[in-house]
Length: 145
Image (cartoon, rainbow, N blue to C red; front, top):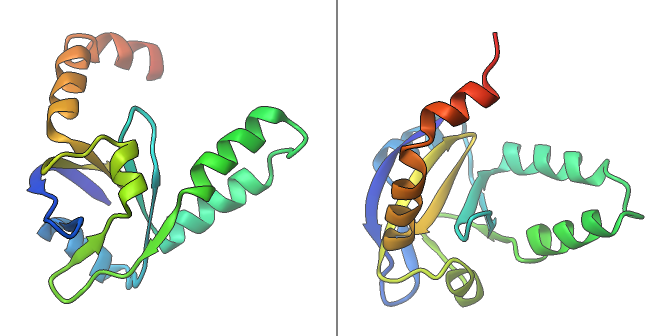
């Protein structure tokens, strides 16, 4: 499971270091590849192999005759890239994904249970500021006993 918020940076070659806590999870699960794609809210989603396969199966089961399914699949799968972390646990972000998420040098890497997200640091601060006051209201609407 991926949890926590970590400040990092994108280097001049568009590489990002995976946080140490996430490396432990990746190693424990025996993951060799990660999949990076366009996320929602202008961030990038990073999935492990198992989670990627689960997402793929879920979206494959949706009827391709629906326009929204086709559009989403094109954006989600069409932009995906398979990454193998290097010896320093860095992954390379293609320029088009970096542009999509508006990533500057300073980024946040956020654990979201089965995946982690890569955000521009300022965009994440704006998201957090806009969301924190509604956190309890959101919980009340989503969580029922």
